[in-house]
Length: 177
Image 1 (cartoon, rainbow, N blue to C red):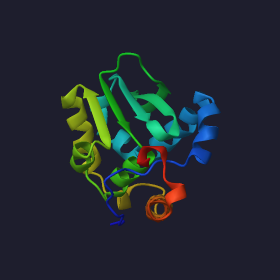
Image 2 (tube, helix red, strand yellow):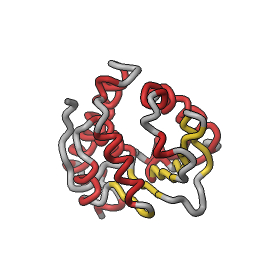
Image 3 (cartoon, one colour):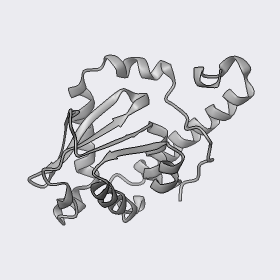
Image 4 (tube, helix red, strand yellow):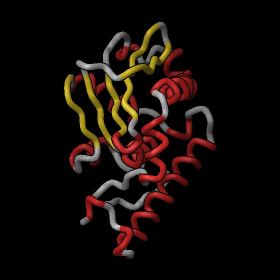
């Protein structure tokens, strides 16, 4: 299991990295994401394990990455598109918290109760997603070991940056002031 230090506040993507994501067209964000998700979950899609998402309307918002997209399954493919105005389920978090969830260093319940993961809408659909994700071992997914190493590296960088910010008074974020 990949380890990460638990923090009371979830680290956010640095503003320097947020700027290009703000101006990047949505299609340039969602097309690679769709390809990635279909690659990572190819086996689960082939085994119809994601049928519970068939034609369901979900919006995922990654607040610090300025990324908001819809996600559904159609014809055994995950489809990422523009965020929907009235989704059945809306999931919101930061990149860091989603990486913790993917790496298995924090579970969805902990993130939810710390308010690092927010869900509104169809709670039954949210539970299906939660159970699906918890039933997958990151080690069994395609793109290993690169996926695990990338998550581990990203979490270590965020944890180290957070510890440094706590020690340097001039590096505190707006939220800390």
